[in-house]
Each structure stands twice: as structure tokens, then as C-alpha cells.
Amino acid sequence: MKYKDLISYLLYLTMVLISSVTPSAIKKSALLPEIHRIKSLKFEFTDSIGSIEWDLDLAQVAEKALESQSLIKLDIHATEPIRFAIKKCMNIVLSKSSGFYSNTLYLDVPWLEFFLNEANKPCLIGPHELSLEVHFGFKGTSGYFSFSESTFTSQHHSPKQTTSIQFTNLYSGMISMEKLLRKALAHRRTSTLIAILDVSETVEVRFGKCGVDQRIFDMKKDTPLLFRGELLDHFNRLNFLYCDAEPWKWMFNLTISSPNSTGFIAFDVVKNKNPHLISYLLYVTMVLISSVTPSAIKKSAPLPEIHHIKSLKFEFINSIGSIEWDLDLAQVANNGTLESKSLIKLDIHATEPIRFAIKKCRNIVLSKSSGFYNNTLYLDAPWLEFFLKKANKPCLKGPHELSLEVNFGYKGTSGYFSFSESTFTPHDPSPKQNTSIQFTNLYSGMISMERLLRKAFIDRRTNTLIAIVSETVEVRFGKCGVDQRIFDMKKDTSLLFRGKLLDHFNRLNFLYCDAEPWKWMFNLTISSPNSTGFIAFDVVKNKNPRENFILVLAVLILLVLLLILVWCFVVLLLLQAINDSMRMKAAAKIFHQQKDSAFERELQAINGLVDLPRTSTTLSMDGTGKE
Image 1 (cartoon, helix red, strand yellow):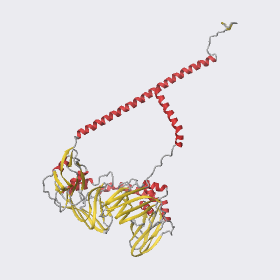
Image 2 (cartoon, helix red, strand yellow; image 1 turned 180 degrees about the vertical axis):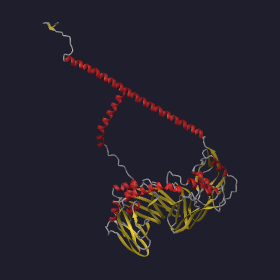
Image 3 (cartoon, rainbow, N blue to C red; image 1 turned 90 degrees about the horizontal axis):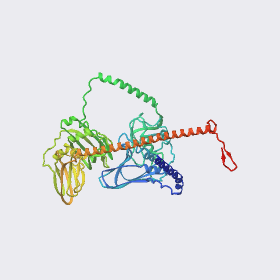
Image 4 (cartoon, rainbow, N blue to C red; image 1 turned 135 degrees about the horizontal axis):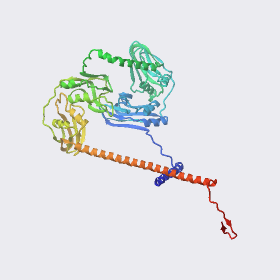
């Protein structure tokens, strides 16, 4: 206990010294260095084709700009026409889908608050991160996107507030609805900004600014357009987007297209109906449905047979930029299709060159990034199983749904993608099985590895398909002109086909076209300038999983034992501390009892309650005493 008391006392003295010395030391020392936040972000691209996507974290740039009451300047330059989109939760926040070389935009406070507070909030669908997606043409393109702090001064000339506009055929102009917008934003939970139309036919209404993509609505008479939620926020941000040509705050561009008709559009902020009453009515409706439905189902006729979808068609008309569709092929690739040994036919036609990619979890499943007009592909059993069982499994990153993304050029393009059941019969030539290939400079040809692939798939948990090369080479695996998987392989460094790569490699063997209709075959291309060598394939056993399991189990047991020993030691220390505490209390009690009894005896002696021996002393003249 003395040792512990000594340690406690030393710790106490240390804390006292620190608390007494630190303030003066801080006063005398230099100031702590300021945390330097990022003032700008720059995304560069060099000789790029296809598309690039970056995660876009502008929180620090926005925070710095808000503190200094600045704006964010978005500066874009490219050597060839490009298109871009800033996305959040698969929704477009800001984009320009017509090709352009350069542009400069200025983003004011609502944009900064969005980048700082909203940009990384979770999404119900799609990736949580804000992203910048850039699409290039078919020529190598270089340039950059720069986000930086700016002292640009917007103009606020307080124009007449617009509540209604009369139009004939076409109207286009800058208008302001500052008062209505402020009112809608201040009371967004109880009020709604609306636009209503009085015209005999459907009218196209566009809201935009500074040449970025407009929000387009087809409006009908007596059907109001409601600005609330994300649309109200977007509409508000539009008022705080500036460029050199349109530097006005609280203003935006309104375009109304109404061929052969005259009418007016009006804006207003209206009170919402009682939200509590609506919630109560919805609750009562759900209770009634849940109480009535079971008995109704029991008494009803048998459910009709479900007719599976046999084809899906995605059409596009006069399109530019890009389009993305959710791609649910589960019903097309149903068990009936598998049982009937049918295939899925992917038929593609376009009036101008296009590119496409089928994606899952932001990974490309099938794509063609070189421009083409028409193509027909046939997808066999492994593809059908993928569409039926794996295509909608959850993702760690990116949207869960399978998607079809189509990129167009700068001319309006029309055409379609069609997925349908097909009775196409692939060829099964049973060629010589390839386990090694000798090459000089360049090799390209169709090869078969049916036996090795079957062996790798029989027990993929213990076997791995590998490829090794004798020289450093570029190796490509592909078929039917779709994008190839490219690998830079080095001598004595094996390429391992496992997981998703093995699945993709297997599906490649079951992808057909009229030019390459062979099952269990794929196209191998080896590029090795000025060298001769070989590539070899084999299936090897993984390390004994039982041995690995035993080793992991032994380590876990040791860790558990170590934890038990630590806990035992801690418990012993606690018990010792409790025992010492009890002993100290007992000792203190005995001490106080003894002290109290001695004190009482002294008091009694003073008060004469105790008979003390009576003695007398007589002093003699010589100083000695006699009793």
C-alpha cells in the first residue's frame, strides 16, 4: 500500500506542476500552428477517351470560402469537347451534356452549404459520395477541372418580382422570384412554392442558368408544379449560380415553349393541407387494408399464372450526352429460359457511334468503349445465372442494381438496346486444349481451356487457375469485339484467376456473336515487342485449408487464453485492493477505538472520576524531599 500511495502522491505532484507551469509556458511559447485547409482542388486528365469519375470532396474548400465570405470558382478547360455531371445519390446536382471546350462558373453560399453539410449524407440508393463524372469524345482529350476560392462579386439589381408571365408560342428571359423563394424556404414544412399554367395544350417549361443543363417539365393546365424537397433546394441553388454573362443573384432563366398557343404561367406560395390529418387518414387506410386483405384473398379465385417477361427494350431518340437505365434481366433470364436451354440475345442499333457499359457495384460487367453503330451478342447459361441470382445482391460500394449506361456523341442519336430470348446455337468444336503458347512479338488467336476451367470451378475454394509468362508482356482476354481485360504480366509473377475475375473469364467463354460462335473459347492477345517467350496456364492447389484452419484456430485459442489470464490478473488486483481496503478500515477502527478509550480515561482523571493514589511531598531545606 505504501508503494501505491507513493505513486499516487507523485502523480498528484506532477499534475500540480503541469497545471501551474503550463499556462505561463503557453503564454511565452509561440502560437500553435494554424490548421491549413484545402483552398482548391484540381482534377487533370491527359489524352483521355471514354469517361472518368472522381470522388468529389469539397467540404474543406467550401468551409474556407464560407469563413472568408468568398465563392467557389469552377474553371473548366479541355482540348476537345467534353461533357460533365456532378452527382449525388445517382441524381444530377450540376451538369452540362452538350459538348464544350471551356467554362467558368461561380458558386455562392447555398452551394457551399451543400458541399459542407449535405454532400456526404447517406443515400437510399447509389453511392454516398459526391462524384464528378467527365465524358470525352473519340479523340484523346487533355485539360482540367479546378475548384478554387474566388472573390467574384455577384450583382443584385433588385428587379421586379415575377409572380406571373404571359407568353405566346415562346418565352425566354431572366426573372426573379426572391420574395417567393425566401418565403418558401422559411416555411418549407408548412408551405409549398407552386407554378400553375393556364393554356389549352401541354407546355414545355425550362429552368436554367449560365448554360448548364436545364430542368425540363411538361406542364398541363390546372396541374401545378410543386417545388419542394430536393427540387426546391436545386431551384434555390440555381439563383446563386453565376457566370460572366449572367452574374445576377436571385435570378434564373425561364424558357417556355408552347407552339401555336397563348397563355400565362403563375407562381405562388401556398399553405400545405393539415399534415397530421393526412398522416391519420393514411394510418386508418393501412389498418383497414391489413384487416380486410387476408379474408379477401382466402375467398378470391386462385391467382393467375405469372407470365415472365421475354424481352426488354431500351429506346433513345435524338439523344446526346449519356443515359443510364436500371437493368433488371431476372425475368428474361428466368428458370424457364435456363431449362429450355435458350440464350439472351442483345441487339444494339444506333444512327451514330455510341459506347455502352453494363455495370454492377461500379464494376464493368460487359462494355464496348470504342464507338460503334450496330452489334449482336448472345449470352449463354453463366450470364443468365448471373442476371438471375447475383445481379441484385448488395454492394459494398455503389448502387446495388445492375445498370446499362449508354454514351452518345455530339449529334442527336436514335436507336435501341434489346434483350430477348433466342434459340441461337453455339458451336462446340472441341479444339485442342491449350496449356501453353509460344509467342514472338505478337500473338492473337482463339484458344480453349475447357478442361482447366472446369477443374478450377469444380472446387474453386481449394483450386486456383493461374497464368505465368517467361517475359514481361501485355496480355488481353476478350471476345466478339467487347472490351478486353488487359494485364501487364511480369516474369515469374503469376496471374491468379479467382473470385470475380474467374467468373468474368468463365462468362467470356459463353459469349457468342456471328463471327465467333464458339463455346468454351476466347480470344487471347499477347504483345511482346522484340522478344520471344511463352505463356502457360495451370490449375494449382491452394495451401491446405485444413492446415490454415488449424493454425488460425490455434492462434485464436492462444488469444482467448491470454485474455483469460489478463482478466484473472485484473480480478486478483481488484480482490487485493478490496482486501487491503478492508484491512485498512479494520485497522482504522481499532486505532480510533483505542484512541477514544484513552481519551475517555484522561477525561475521567481530570474530572476526578477515577481514584488516583494520594501522595504528598515535603521539601527540606537542603532540597530533598520527604514523604
